[in-house]
Image 1 (cartoon, rainbow, N blue to C red):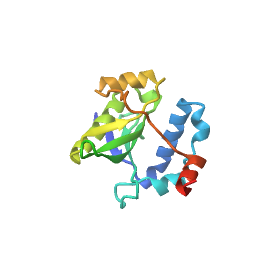
Image 2: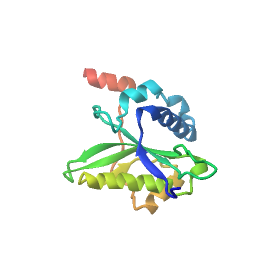
Image 3: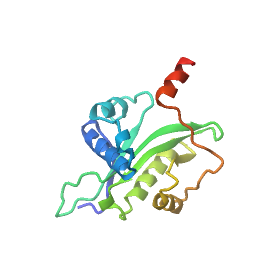
Image 4: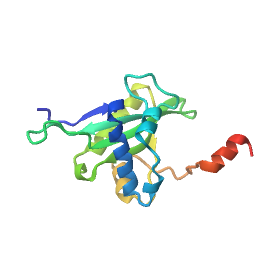
Length: 175
C-alpha cells in the first residue's frame, strides 16, 4: 500500500466534500457559520473540474487523502485547498490565490497542509508564475506561524478591500 497521501483535483461527484469542508472552516471561525451560503448546486455551478472546460473565474479544489491502511483501505479526503489563478502586473506573471486551506483537526500534524501548499507552489511554477498568495485572519496565530514556517511573509503595505451585498449592487449600477 502507498505510504504517501494523494492529492487530486475535486470532481463533480466530490462536491459534497467541498461543501463539508467549507462548513468546517466556517465552524472554526464562529460566528461565521451563518455566512456560509454554499450549496451542492452552487458549488457545481461555480467550481471548475479537471475534465470539464474551465468556467469564467475558474476555481479549483485540490483534495488530499491519507494513504490507505489495513484499517482504512479506502480513505476519504481530509483536507482541501480552494484556489484560482491570478495575475501580477508588477511581476508580469501569473500566480495562484489560495482562497481556503483546510485540514480536518483529526488529521492535522501529518504535514497535509504543507503538502497542499507544496502542490500549489508546483502549479504556480508550471505556468511560469511568480507567487502564491492568500489571506489569513490576524487573530489566527497558529496558522500565521505555520505560514511563516513555509516562507510566507505578511504584507504590511497592502490592505485587503472588499465590496459585497448592496454596496456591490450600487457600485454596478453606478449609484
